[in-house]
Each structure stands twice: as C-alpha cells, then as structure tokens.
Image 1 (spheres, rainbow, N blue to C red):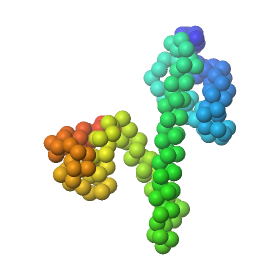
Image 2 (cartoon, rainbow, N blue to C red):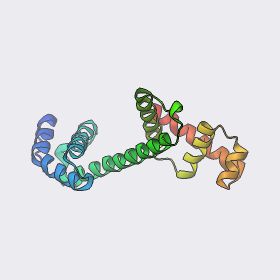
Image 3 (tube, rainbow, N blue to C red):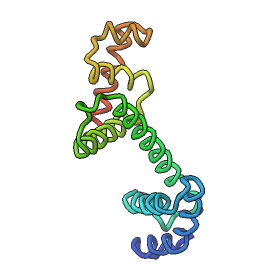
Image 4 (cartoon, one colour):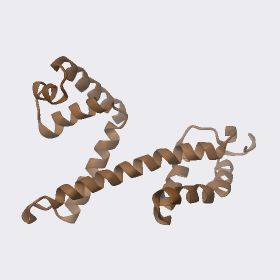
Length: 169
C-alpha cells in the first residue's frame, strides 16, 4: 500500500515502477506478443491516471491493475474481432468497390467508435439500434427480426438514444 501522505504523481510513479513489468508479463501471456502487451500496459496506467481512484488508498494494487487491464484486454479482443469481421467483409467485395487504405482506416475507426458508444447496452437494444441506423429498418421490421413487439422496439430505441446522449455528454 502506498503512503497516504504521498503526492498523487509520486504514487503513480511508485505504482508504475513496482507493477508495470508484472502487468506486462501477465498481458503478454494473454495477447501473445510484447508489443500489444506493452501498449495495453501503458493504456492501463493511463486509465489509472485518469480515474478518480485515490492511489494512496489502494490496498491491493495488482488486483486493481488487473481489473483495469482485463477491461482493456476485453476491448482489445473485441476490437480485433471487429477488425477481422471488417476485413472478411472487404474480401467479399468486388475489386472495383474496395475502399482505399485511408477509407478503410476511417471506416474501421468509425466502427470502433460506434462499438464503444454502444458498449454497455443490452444485446437486443444494440441490435435494434443498429438495424435502424445501419440498415434503415422500421420498427415493424426490427420487431419481426428480433421476434418482439413494436412497443418493445420503441422502448429499445428510446433506451439506445438515451444511452448515446448520456455517453456524448
């Protein structure tokens, strides 16, 4: 545990020095390479720095770092899965329809931002929102696809819009 009288920047410095290599090693075993593990480790400490958690109050710093690291690892795998699905979809396009590398990058960034925006919504709510926004389906069509009532779709959409507004604030 870090001394409560320690300034926050020194607390972070101590936390980083004492636990970075351990965290990187743990992450390396999960992602299979040192580069991604180093990036995730750095992202973990950036999140810790940005959090409101008082570092001086941490009783189990490794457990805290592990919790933050696991969330980032989950996001990492979701992003990798999204990238793979996107690349597979691109492979199905005729050659003259394939976007440029710059366009691909922008599309992938947009997909990742959308995925992060909708993170935390229940799956049916996400699906209803995506059917509406990406496929342009009406509530009746969405209700049929999800096998729910139109009223439920209206609730899902209201929940999705509210979530997006709250995240945007």
